[in-house]
Length: 243
Ligand SMILES: N[C@@H](CCC(=O)N[C@@H](CS)C(=O)NCC(=O)O)C(=O)O
Image (cartoon, rainbow, N blue to C red; front, side):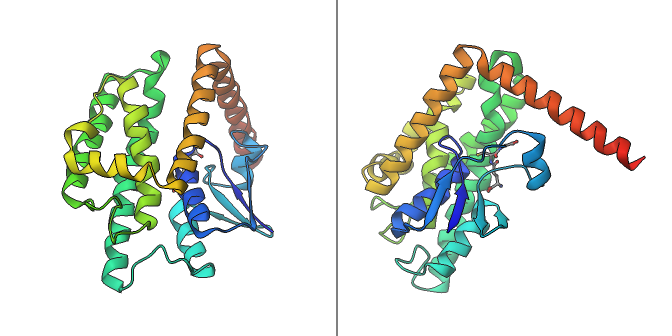
């Protein structure tokens, strides 16, 4: 049985989970990797990030690559287009969700903690998010879906991206730009009623609450410090063994 290494709060994992739910796939186990955040995880998975699809021991990283692979092996219901041009448009919108929203938001997320705050980083990455929401406003579908009048891989990437913009960006001090982007706001209100989107959004909210509790009680800061120290020691040991 295939496994998807995933986590509630991981937006990239949520993107693949939304695809799995929308396709009705039941033979992929969802698991949080026991070694996530440790040198052992980075040793096993060089990029060191989730999601990873475990195909009987063959490890496939990167959410977009996993999504395209799942589209090929579970072709129905199809979350790409009915024509090559439609598929290209779906992929363009998915890239807005991935590169222009999620990536900037993921890099910004540490900035919500006082110990990490750097105004230059917030201005740079937050400015990109605001600009990209304006771009999305000119591209997004007006019938409750990102495009094509049905759920596609574009929605799979945009839903977790917009979740982060709404719920994490304001904690950096930047106002949520979604309400001022009328088409994005209408899409965002509508897609949350989709049962598959609602399911991943509930998981993302659960993950965010757990993270916020860990930040409040100090255990997140301790966990991050321990992970950084363990990685530094592992890197030093690897360097020494090569010398
Ligand atoms: N480009 C990657 C990004 C994945 C990613 O950044 N995952 C985050 C969680 S959402 C992660 O595992 N971060 C761990 C780390 O940065 O050490 C993808 O599309 O899968």
